[in-house]
Length: 361
Ligand code: SF4
Ligand code: FES
Image (cartoon, rainbow, N blue to C red; front, side, top):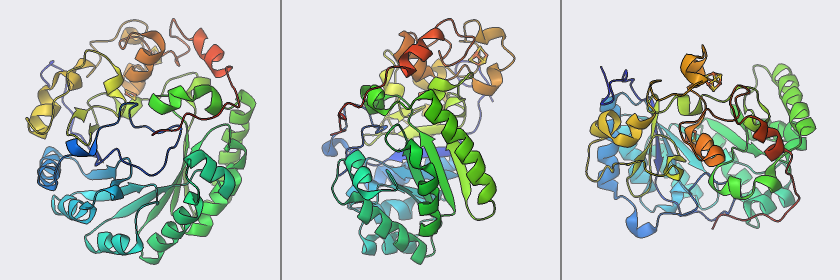
């Protein structure tokens, strides 16, 4: 089947449901936009239930229930039950703060399949400083223990940057002690709040090289005990990441107010027209909305991507990063060593400072 722009139409596999932008924490690398959507604009439960059914009919297998902090929604249990009934595999992405034990038990009873908790550091004082919330570390650890006690599979997500990159080994040890089946070590990606804090978050090349070697050692040491996934920091890479598995190819994001985006940062690109689930079905949005078709396939690519053998592997990198760094969303992601603007990456990565964070508020 073809999309409205004539490109091959793939089935989406994953849906990121951002229930709310409200969150008690203020992480300086938050992936939410700088301009947060308000509580008054949030979709109601009936609309989310329809979106989940439409997603399942479209081929989506898994919904990541996220935010902000999704537990800030009082109807979180009903929302998870609706996703479960769609039917979708449900993964709750939580800060662990603001989700009470009784609610967690109710979520498990409502069919929740998996929980992902973010932990900011292996040391409490640093973790609380990064989160901008006193006591966050203790509450996250307590909730993680409760997840395991309830028999739910747990992934620990640790975002790595210059303040904690030297403690990857401790962080993996912590995830093991918590009983997590998987740890995701994700270097900061510089969009939105993280871009505001780039110099304060940027690790040095030597730190990154040590981190990559540490992850390999830990994978060998803990094989069979925990899965270690690592997202490398692309400012130091030679090739870009295949962002979101290719634009309009694998996934959709629904914002708290119902706007459907091809990726979490897509609203940073001016001129894209996003459709809302309030006015359109998810199928119509996936197939025909202008934003999804803007960079679908390979026809939009300029050189060097247009004739590059890797164009179906990395899809020219990240459109949002290309725009944020070059002002042109069609440009080759400057992370690529073949990109005309690649020289800027070394310069940007070298700009590092132990500056105070601009917290997400
Ligand atoms: Fe990927 Fe484009 Fe670089 Fe080729 S030139 S490796 S397609 S970003
Ligand atoms: Fe938007 Fe990469 S974050 S395409």
